[in-house]
Image 1 (spheres, rainbow, N blue to C red):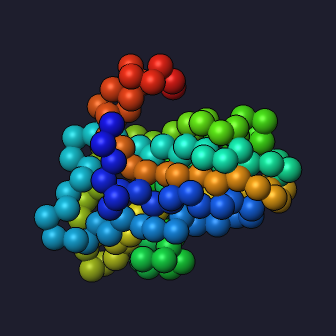
Image 2: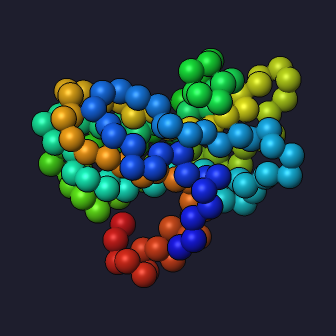
Length: 149
């Protein structure tokens, strides 16, 4: 699977407490209509095992600010993932509440940016993740190649 750096929201991001992804996807960029015809799905890959914490929940958020701190709307949420499952190489996916596409933002809503919020219970003292948007078709190809879900 080929990844586009514009669709990567976390690259080896350390997770210790609740945080948002270090990058966001700008839905207002002219000509960038990335969500036509496929579910909005993000995949988080654990680069370095998370240690000493309790759980992580990954939320897909839409917001008014590029740094993901403005008005936030949660459009998808993963199940709660326990620390024992956050080993190196683990993959966690979440899809936006059945949405097949996001319309370009308008001035009324201005929810122009898409990213991830990692809600953490406990405090992890080690671990990093890489998270990116990927179309459903590419996930199916990835499963066939890597044999993982």
